[in-house]
Image: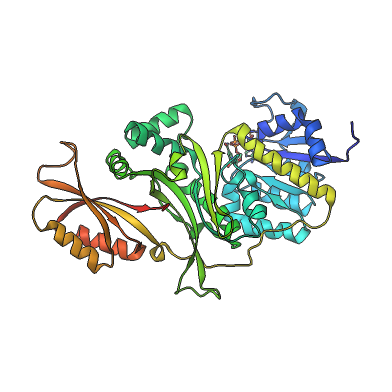
Length: 442
Ligand code: NAP
């Protein structure tokens, strides 16, 4: 066996992901050493309760509650505790102690990314975070390295498995949101408190991370427009299917030209998370169950799609271990780590300035002249109609004398659209605005 240099690896956290990382580090030690060019010695695991049962069979003597003592003296620190503190303090300590850091902590990077990357730059260390967006799917390295010579125009990602599972079942089974959510919680696909997933917070964190990398711009989490999926009901799903669409919670990161921005190139970016209609023939429409996928459009490379498991202990451990090998190679090679490039510093435009196509579903009185009134309000609001359909609504879904209109628009500006929808709602001919959904992906 090759006599490799020994690198001391400290692990913080041994939950769903950490216990699998520890297990694989030990089981595949020889192979990992060959790939890394260094022996990766797991010197300890910091947890809250060293005596808690673990998903993997790990020696009790590795466990400690003293993360500080473990971090100081480590060559590589793997942070898999999650949350902001003590993860932030521990990562800063690791960097200032000369270690490279591997983390899967999207919440921390989306809120304190610049602080952590600056700290790494100051000491010439590297922070690796392949598992922080879309779990096992390699997307950070492709954006940071493989596409470094290209210009990313747009990313559309299904980056939250729980919401994709819920929307997929609503689409394929015709079920209601609340029923599928309850089932997802019973099966372990959704947390007891599903807010982070169904309200889009988790996807927004990942969108901030992906957009920062893709556009070389620090994107603060507050700049990400976020909407969840609670408003999607069975009728909206049925109407989408009928019109040839499927509804997905999308993270959209887009480079756009914006005349109003104060940017030397006239370029800006938009970063947004919302449920959107995508054509059933789009590659993202075929992402089923709890899977994730990221669709990238780059100037030279064209369309690329990355697909796979967005979560899961062992799946996420794969991405973490890939980072550990990279960190080890860098540590052995020496030199200064390459930091995150945020030099483009593009402004993030508010959602009101974004343009997309829309599908507006209205309940109106089923009388002559109503369609003309609706069309007039849309035209006054600079929203151009592409299609109009009066849908067949199952008896009992609406009161007698009420018709449902589904209006597809050409590209319109979000602010114009929302002002127009307000005017429609107040017009007297519209009983209810059932839904307003953006159309993405064509
Ligand atoms: P988890 O199952 O909740 O495990 C967290 C671990 O961290 C536990 O071992 C816990 O110790 C330890 N810990 C928490 N607070 C601590 C503290 N103050 N001091 C010392 N140890 C502490 O979390 P996870 O699901 O493995 O997720 C870990 C990270 O990976 C998170 O950032 C998450 O967002 C990310 N991630 C997870 C997945 C996934 O599928 N689970 C996918 C992608 C990314 P005890 O065991 O003693 O309580």
